[in-house]
Length: 137
Image 1 (tube, rainbow, N blue to C red):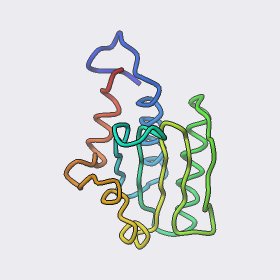
Image 2: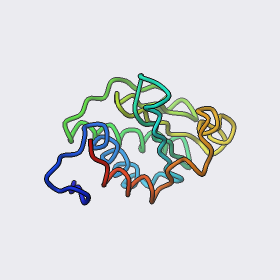
Image 3: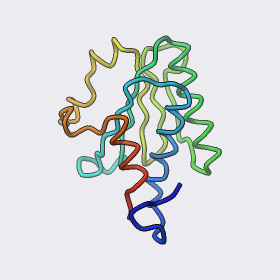
Image 4: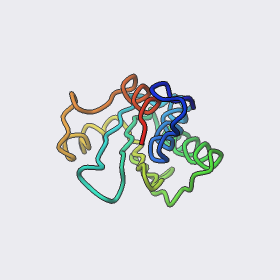
């Protein structure tokens, strides 16, 4: 992925991973893709990626696509939970934690609000792609 702000300076691994995840979510036709930079709130992860699927099968496909593309890009999948049996699948990728949710679960749990980040601060699809493509270390 090209870094448009400074093509000679490589992206940090966290930002590269986020870009891979966003690309995978788009390929799997995930809905309402949002990313949250939580690095200032926790040392557990740098980013949350949250998206919505249309059915339990779609949730599973989104998670599987994200894990596959992550591995292909050379990153590790640390764990996953809820695949195929839940309305909420969590994939731990270290610097990025992916939440794939049904519309009902996403509305009920409101992760953006839980992390104290209102919708104006959260990066929607276009902002997430732009920021992931341009961030540097």
